[in-house]
Amino acid sequence: MGKRKKVLERDGTAFPAKTYVDCLLKPVFNDQRDFLFSAMFQIHRAHVLMLCDKGLLSRDEAGKILRAVEKLAGKDPSEFQYDPRYEDLFFMVEGMLKGEIGEDLAGNMHIARSRNDMGVAMYRLVLREKLLELIRNVQELREALLYVGEEHLETVMPAYTHTQPAQPTTLGHYLLSVHDMVERDTKRLWSAYQNVNKSPLGAAAITTTGFDICRDSVKDSLGFEEVVENSYDAIAGADYLLETATSIMILMTDLGRWVQDMLQFCTREFNAVKVADAYVQISSIMPQKRNPVSVEHSRSLSSSAIADAQAVLTMVHNTPFGDIVDTEDDLQPHLYQAIDKSVRVIKLMTAVISTIEINREDLARRAREGYITITELADAMVREKGISFRTAHQIASKVAHKAHRAGMELDEVPPQMILEAAKEVLGREMTFSQEKLAQVSDPHYFIEVRKCPGGPSPKEAQRMLDVRKSRLKEDRDRWTRVEGKIQSAQERLMDRVHSFILSSDG
Image 1 (cartoon, one colour):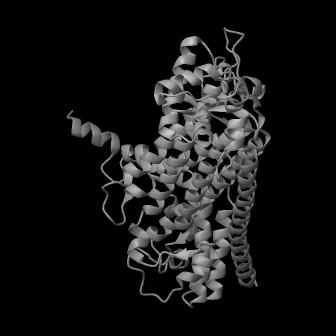
Image 2: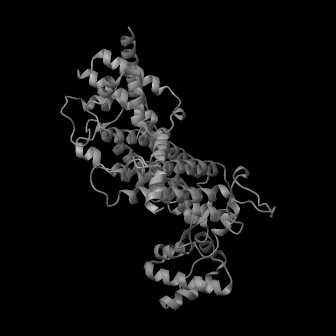
């Protein structure tokens, strides 16, 4: 038997082939059932009510359709299993509605509507819900960063450039910097949300419809903020998917960088951070180990979320600008997975950050090592001795070299070493008292004098922290308003649906 004959015997000669069912239709059906079930019925409700308002359905017809819609919507989604008689979940539901109210009435529910605009609307409804969940959890992370940061406005630590100790700062200043990056991530998520929360309904296949419909009515019933005005754009424009994916990629990339810091801070060699016992595991063979697996998993999951989000961009890239399956059911789960993984990471790191213990003494010791306060010595030469900064930099560099050869830290350097270095650079002597040298080598003094806007001075850091607390409250208030508007729209929609059903029953 030839290969072609074998395949046809296995798959059959009529659509859908068994392989097509197993590899595509059944998995797509399951994804639609698991992700889009509720959104599909929300759209049915809003569309039927609009058709009635515009006189395209009678009130009695609308009531009968809505009663059948609610009967199916009340079922457990798991009851819906793939059936080869139907291409997908939506045709199955239409078939079930025909059994309830007849073919003509079930068919009229789709006046002025296409699977195209309906599909895009479902994707947007699900995506906005997931984005709001992610934004809420990012807000929780920001609160944790501010909370712990405020506890450590005076916890001195080295700041790093090129992975090397550079200058003293505070843990509070560091955590504020992480917060500010995450705050910008929040803004990107809000931007994505705004572009997701637009209604494509009324675009129909791609050119609207000849029926007199009201796109704004459906938009308001579903809690969308705007209508995607151009009907071609409503169907073809997938940039709302790309913006969401990109914002997730940036969020998880940003998170991965400071998570990597956290893993370094947790090492026994670094000994700066202790992850709470609830978030570490003990080695199966080495009982002394405290493995910060919660942080490791966060790093791994953030990379996985980035990969899922990147898949969205790759799938849309170089596709035609129109209705195309590449932006539909095969793509959507990647975006949902990217968001779900991001939420898991954010929740986990919020818990870890909120419960960490800090080795303040060891961090303070490190802030005195490696001559990382020597910039202040150069600054003091400029302020008190009237020399240029570049000259002061050369003198300070020589002091560092001499101290290193002598096995001294900066707070151990005698005035004579400054005098010698100055003579080599300036050709004349320049002196500092032992008291002055002790002051400029003190990391606490280094931090205290850096009180210009954005600096690590505890007073300035507290000012920044208070501003950010206020902005976080405003952001949370915005979330509450947005969520409340959606909930109100859903309640109004359901009130109208129940009213129509009751009047139809009468």
